[in-house]
Length: 461
Image 1 (cartoon, helix red, strand yellow):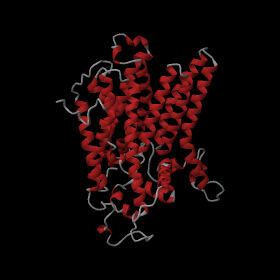
Image 2: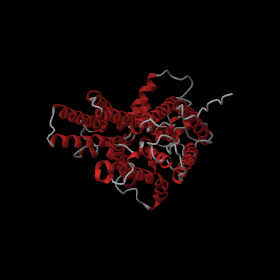
Image 3: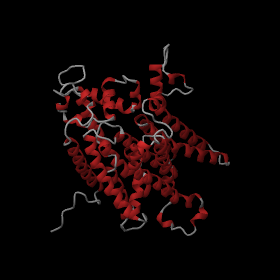
């Protein structure tokens, strides 16, 4: 009698990834809802008004029992839910993704009202469902992106694609990919943008200019949308800047043609589309706070007015080296493993690409372990990830790197490469890697501990 195939059989990757996703999400869900009470901070209860009053609940608030959806409304998600419900009431709320709150508000208003559930709880339900769907789709997008980058001709290549997507399920973002946060939607948009961009790269290399250019513009739209969700999405615009420089060099070198100029125009238009992801929210805020008003806010007088820059610096103390204080050393230590992996994987991509950038360096290099296409794509995707790591180290609240790194694929591939070795070989030859083992165990442990802290409204966030 033949053995029944396992539900987690990598030979049926989509089913296996779906089962793994559902099991992991169920575990995270149970951890969060099992956390007792409001936690040390009662801010979530301010959104919950079961009596219909408009005032803040007080008095015996410590005995209040939140509905399950609001168990997921912690830290920044309080702002996201409030903005989706009421719009941008307070200036400091402009630090939180314009695109995400608008999507959340649109979906919430389009759905029927849930009987007996408060407005905030209803919005939280929609946000939780949106986060789960977006995270699942981003897992599939990463799987397809991995196929574009590494191929799936050999068993090893297939396994690399599968394991990379599986790592995205258990990544350190943990509870933030289930809660009313923009991380899941950003991950979906950014990774999907990388996938479409890689498809455009392959089409242009195959001489399919029209489909390649069309996909390039679609990728720009996805990156622009990702930027409205999280501002670090603008880093993906580096791909277009890099391509523009290469195309300009081709044009200047004497290979001037109508196709070359048209392709350069497409790249420039794509870059402008990505920039709109930052410009449009700022323009809306400028019209709200600055236009036709006698008493305007200080940022209105800036050479390049930016409410986002003002709010981040004035209210959240975000800026170059501002986070470098003795009290934040524990947060730097918490973020250091992920920062190390991001930096190391970016250097790894450069190591893979250098022999193809400088052909003389190919001497003594095992060319079977990589291809020019893979190297080119790895190099391109390494730049935005490397910039993200540098900015997190110098200018962000450094601990958030553990969750915003979820939308960048390169470090997943690096970890898988540590145990898979040569992706061009015909048979999987997985071997032990202490780094990979420690990383996977660390991600699982961190995500579960984080879910417990998150559900109890305890730092770090």
